[in-house]
Amino acid sequence: MSRRDALRALLALGAGVAVAPRVVPAQGQSKMRRIGFLTPRSRPSPPNTDAFSEAFTQGMRELGYVEGRNVVIEWRYADGRYQSLPELAAELARMDLEVIVTYGTAAAQALKKTTASIPIVVAAAVDLVGSGIVASLGHPGGNITGLSAIGVDLSPKHAELIKTWCRGLPPWPCS
Image (cartoon, rainbow, N blue to C red; front, side):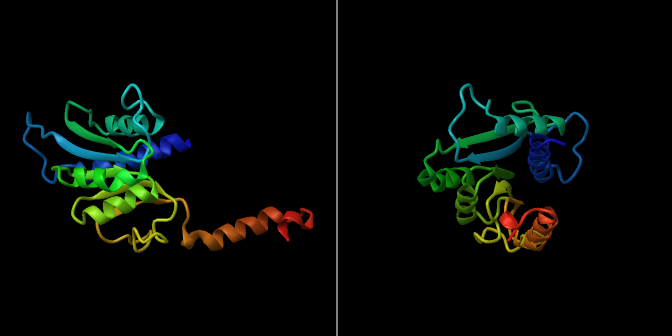
């Protein structure tokens, strides 16, 4: 599975689980689901054509959620202005959303400070635990879950992999 496919699957699964109906509706009924999407990136032109949002919408389609048909996605772009993330997070928190999807430590921190009730799926952040966004990767607690690029829990495994890689190599770079 490629990195892009894995990202698509994670984003869609996280958002799909969060918006899945608690009770199966009667046939013929369909509720319009509402998802927020916060990104520090710039707004793509045309809309939603960057790799990240494309992967997200494709993953949602694979789960049966099609924007405009049975899901509304409230896209918010910081356009590289990280100082605007808190304002955009607050805007999303005021909406009637079932889940907010984001990536990046700064966006996740802004959302954590803004809402403790709307589920938040973080596609990737540098260190969710170290930055205080979640309690641990195994048991994040609260309303936030997601992936971390750095996991203290994985550090012993990283050291083991480095030792394995260094066997048979000259002293540098393994000394």
